[in-house]
Length: 169
Ligand code: AR6
Image (cartoon, rainbow, N blue to C red; front, side, top):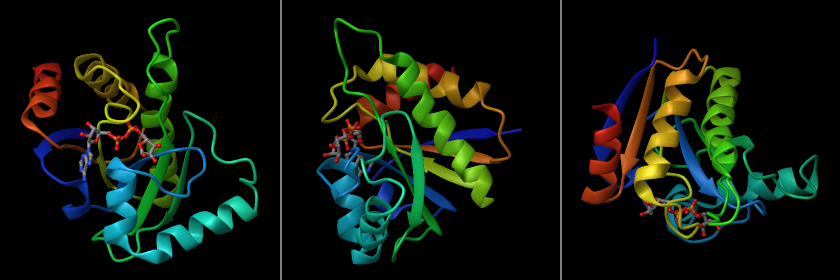
């Protein structure tokens, strides 16, 4: 049974077995959550991302998939990097966004992570409307078959927190 919790704050300040990064397919960093995780987590994370790119992820990580690295000096054992879809008004990419949550939880299970902190994937640079993203995120986690005991959504502002709270009812 997975418990879903919500907190308002900066995900890089959280303590959890795994912290999920809203990455891009290069895995080599960016803005938003990605920038914050690499800044606070230190260079070991990027180093491992580069190794992944030099190895089996030569073409990068596809949208909707997830991969783990060290969490560097963050208060976590792992960072799970996942690539959200860019929001589109002409194409329904909801399945890819749901897949980010499912795949991250699958990787968490492989690692044996029991507490996992997620940001609101795709709702920043990738422009996904917050209410819809919250619905997809909460539904995907509720429907996931996982050993993870706590999924913690870490929301950056009141608007995001309210959107996720509305989904949890
Ligand atoms: N803690 C928690 N939430 C945060 C934080 C933080 N420290 N910083 C931002 N948010 P984004 P995306 C919120 O842009 O839309 C990067 O450049 C933010 O307010 O981080 O999936 C990557 O490299 C928003 O609600 O991720 C990719 O190129 C949410 O986290 C691209 O952005 C996600 O915003 C990914 O875009």
